[in-house]
Length: 327
Ligand SMILES: [Zn+2]
Image (tube, rainbow, N blue to C red; front, side):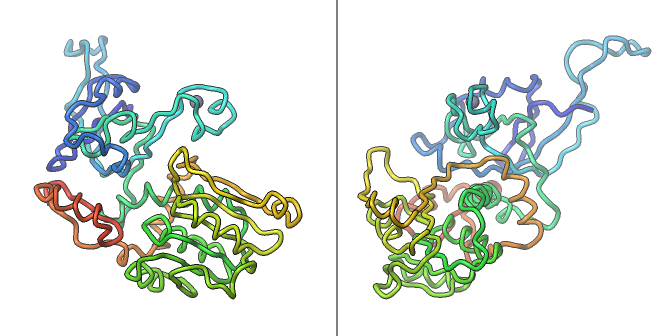
């Protein structure tokens, strides 16, 4: 049996099989979009996948023919890695997250705001046993954090400053602790998020980088994309320190960093972009119970509460807002 392109039915979790070879999913581009302008918010896709077998023309019972035999369908829960390679010089050297022909589900083609989402079979991972839907929807952002940890390099024994306690920051915090950081200090302007950060492992929290701590951190991570926060993170580094820019700044944003300090203190500045071979590791970490998801998640919204969920996101309420179709 061969797994072909699958279409993941989200509304009321109904499965739907695309009778097409892998690659045909682009035909579904922009169909059924419920909420224009927000497709990028929904990379995190859960659903059901099925396998179908092409009909053989050589069956002894004469029942063969063109098309696909859907009589042996079976379905399992899947989570979906959103990007795929479209061959270019970066893909050729294993850096497909930098693909010159960038494409991603929920970005350049339909995401989970659509009623049905077609995904390449290679992007579908079986939802691990013991991982519920709400946790499963965190595997995609966790895979970005896993890639970020790989970009930072070893953090064993390091004092780490982490600015930004949104979903990504709180996932990074837990991975940093698991990777052996001596301490992680979390900075955020929202007191409610700092409370969550304490719950999931922050050694200390603050509304701004404490004056006494400037110049003391071996590693600093910006998970906000705010230029002032990035400059603050840079200023907090000790000599020889490493700064990772993880948050997404606007394309025309600029920061002021001292090139003399980068030279004289041997500061390393790295970026981390999306996911790269990190989705399976994220699924395994979630299955292993490595991530405390409870404090990040509130009660999910039902599909007919979609407007309220969007309002909640815009108002910065909670940490991770989720909508459960059929819930
Ligand atoms: Zn490419």
